[in-house]
Image (cartoon, rainbow, N blue to C red; front, side, top):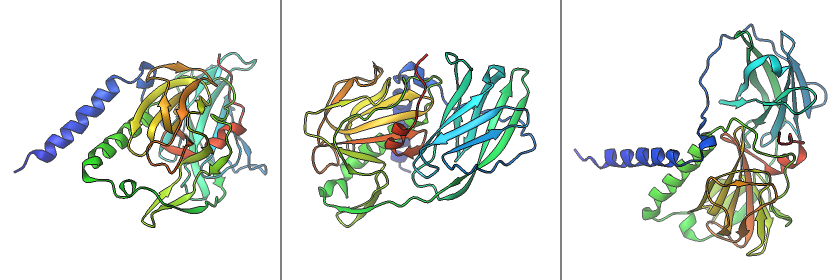
Amino acid sequence: MSTRPKVKILFHFNFIIFFLLFLPAPSLVTSRNISPPVFPPTTFPPEENNHRIQVMTPSGFKLLLEGRAFQPGEILLVQLEGIESIEQAWINGSGQKFYFFRKNSSPEIKGYAFLGLDGELEPGEKSFELVIQKGDKSWEATKFNLYLEGREYRKRKLKVASKYVEPPEEMRERIEREAEIMRVIFSMVTPDWLGDGPFIRPHSGPITAYFGDQRLYNNQRLSFHSGVDLAASRGDEVVAANSGQVALASDFYFSGKIVILDHGLGLFTTYHHLDRLTVRRGQRVKKGETIGLAGSSGLSIGPHLHWSARIGQSRIDPLSLLALSFPEKD
């Protein structure tokens, strides 16, 4: 029997372990697996204002969810009041956990979390669960529903080099390895908020392609556009949309020269097709600081900036980040 498949699996496993060892230290906090007993569930319908809902738990904790819209591809800013008497809290939903962090500098101590609604979620009613461990070590779980409105995406046809539609056989292992690196990065949860106030655009150019565009490359491969494209000239400065830590600065097959910033609590922004990188992995950057120069590397038909955002494995429209008032840094 051939041993080559075993060797390949072992290589991939060892590579991921090697990569994890060299990730920045704050990113090495992974999702915690805690299964508290669930109290009798209560379902809270949304209020009339579909951009903001409030949930009261049976023991009196107030949960406020706010977003640009309740649709696929949106981020919701979640606030939990009364967190001074809470040990830990998170929201379960869409197969993920979204953790709260404690904000102490405001007049009222609040917990904040970011809830991501993936761009390809089906519209309709979705169930979520707020899990709280109180100071006395008791648990409380409250279920609530969100109704997601439908969202329409544009369809576009693009002509690109054939090597990006049907990659050469010798490139496929590289492509698989890079996809695994991305999955590992987006599975990490830094337990602190690294950002500082609201997000800004990383480049001032007009939008040339929108989040969710259905792209048909060379009439063969259909792709979901997971970010927005901003028109840019080669060599234009690209800046950090918020403060954070560089989780990746590398050159990938499809993304070209790419920077991924970790803003904490599972929230990442990514910057693709750069001409040059000006930061390195593990480096702390401030909002507005230059992280690279715009270009056309990787799967690109001309100089531009592809800007995207993730919360865990949820792909979200980065423009939704601009609509919310994120907390200032303590």
